[in-house]
Length: 267
Image 1 (tube, helix red, strand yellow):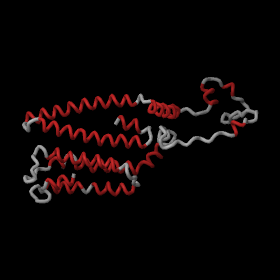
Image 2: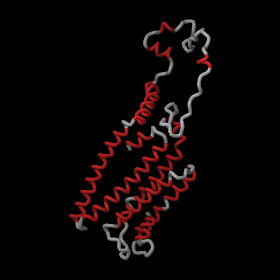
Image 3: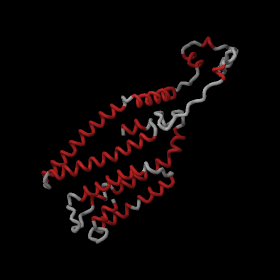
Image 4: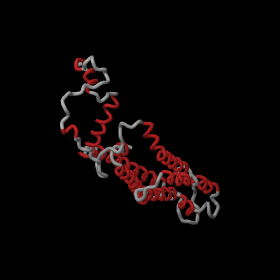
């Protein structure tokens, strides 16, 4: 969450890199869990020791990631973007206007404003404008690789939410559909007795298949950009997994719904 918060101030390709890294982290945890389970005997004490080793390594890994996060904040390019964003947000947060006359009035230097001019009128210098003020250079257009913020702090919050609402609903729908099935329904499935998958390995296999295809899905999402309306169709189809998992849980003796191959295919 810390990395997502920081990369939200950077161009969009950096957010994609963080999401891709989360998929890699899921695969690393899967491999680590398999190694810990294979290294110890399949007994109660062995499973307890395997869990302790797994979560201890994961805790150390989290601390290392926190260290890398604070190291990332010291990268010159990241510091420049964060400093620029803070400079843009600070005046708006303080409620100040970019007006030199008002700033002088706040400091008590009101004698610079003439009484013959209304407060909202700026004093214009009588000297003719110079060539430099008339021919101002056009603002530079940032390139795709420019380390500039992707959002503008001057936009109203409601306008930002209105533009982002389709994708926000897509993300919300994906998370709801996922947590309705995983881990509650998926980990309650039982071995079929003929696929050769032991009882203690079936949950790990289900989680492993989920992690692998979660990683592939994060990678494939960067190859082709889809409009929000097409993404919503896939999100709605995801909710079909809920009744399918319920059928697999309700009919464990059925040749189709009770098969572990069907369980892995649904995952």
